[in-house]
Length: 361
Image (cartoon, one colour):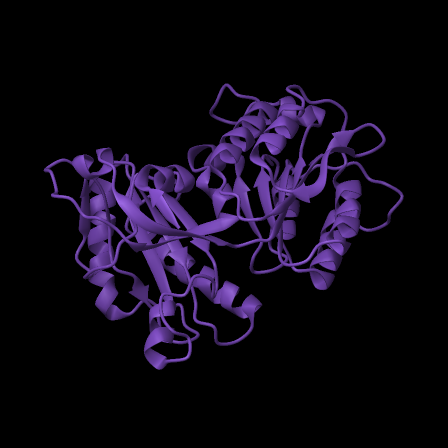
């Protein structure tokens, strides 16, 4: 679909372009960013449905470390902001309050996504937390919700890892494992956990399958594009390039390619990654986004896992060079959004890749 560059940048939340070209850094100048450039952009769904469980318990009144915002205020603000730029790709969605004294509260039942209606539902979320964290009832309700859905579902769970036990003998991890075994579901846990036991519980829930992940709320505040990654990715098929100006605000590179079923970085890319690391260290306000992909060989679960390993490998290479992990956004999509034809050897090689883009200059 045709979209203006401004819409693309708002949707992804980055001041950068994803382009094709040689492995030399492709610079992006402020002049290019400020002008309107018409481009072909495809929004590729990574989920067909999404369910949001919002933590409105009394624990959510605590401040997010390093900020003057409460956890509940930060989560509500981020949901409202992301809703304003979420492309309508035919999702079904629901919003539930993960707190109370006896029962989980439904803010919006599962229904076709409508930005205005979902915005009104977000407005109904409380500004101050009260009651217990009903994580177990939420997961039990999720089992019933998923029975009526088709396709993949992203479960976006705001939690600090605490919960009030119910009569069900299973712990949240056991319930989540049972759900993942029966349904096509991935968990995106936005974690405000502070204690070690809370962090361990949240990490276990988020590591149930290759598509699930845990995102600290502090990182989510800095890089809210994490939430976009739970629902869609962006494919740029062409763009209009303007004359570069001296003031650089970002750059991209050609993809890093990998051997089949491997996450090892080839020798030909190591020097280039070293140069990237040096650039990031010299520009402390910049950050890098790594997106991992695979070819279509093997199962979808396996391909998600190997694409995650590839972005983690590149991320670790950069952190070993002294780049802070808080400046590296890692996203992975498995065989989604192929760059080449999976029916050919050459196409599969193009699909086994990590895309790199730098912004924030």
